[in-house]
Length: 394
Image (cartoon, rainbow, N blue to C red):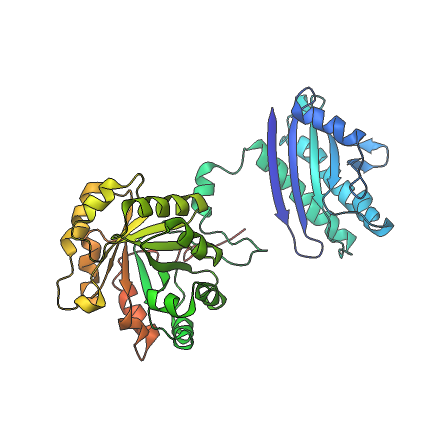
């Protein structure tokens, strides 16, 4: 048996982070416990959790310092408030029934403890580590988190050290803003005016990439660090190479041309999938998108039904959206581009589009924010932003 718990509590510099495992003495946790106690390493000396000298808690608990102990001042924090906090939390957990009393002599605990080198307040060190240990114990005994919790929070969470959310396309529809103007200064100006919304995707357009190179993606990141960015490469050859180039510049998605050879598309989709980013195939100029998709070894993340700027006199191929949706259901995302205005957005969504791509209507507007909101208002989504109704974030 092995149960695992984790908790982070408090504020720096006394912030407490606890990782622990609970298990039987005669199992892998017991073996790791004995090995840890018998093998000391410089700066990370393991120690038993004691409520006071000569009074260890039960189940016996081995504390492992995460941060290298460099001097006696660091050692005092571990051998003082942290050690006491962990031991008291475990003893209280037994008293409160979190840990079964009939298991205290059968189980052992290994507890990894973080103490910031700049921590000074012993009361807070104790306070935070007690709470973190108790919470980690509860979570271990409850097999927290549930898979449902992970699935709900994985695209909502912001890691405090990372500092921004990493977006995924899990809740369509989306408005994709095509940044096609080959002027970086103008594009940066546009991006700064775009209202913050979880419904917005940014596209590093083909003209922009051709003028400035794929590094323009990283420059967009400086202005919009937590927005999903698609690199519209319109790849026709060397599928793997072009995916790698965009990936290195932190693109979340890449676009190939549906006119490319099937071998190129297969390599393009494979490489994007291998690297964990989205692959889209742009069907601009492709008369029968379904025939292209049928030839692929694996479906891309999405397809783009696209009427080009130079095809402004032609009809938007709405019927293709419906045909692709009927053929593949929700196995891929469907985007529409070319001639999209606020008046026809609902028709696109009604037919099954997940993403509407808009360029000049927004990027050449005198009021970029107003133009964006015109489209967002047409999205019949109860929660345009994923944290809109959350009362508390851990």
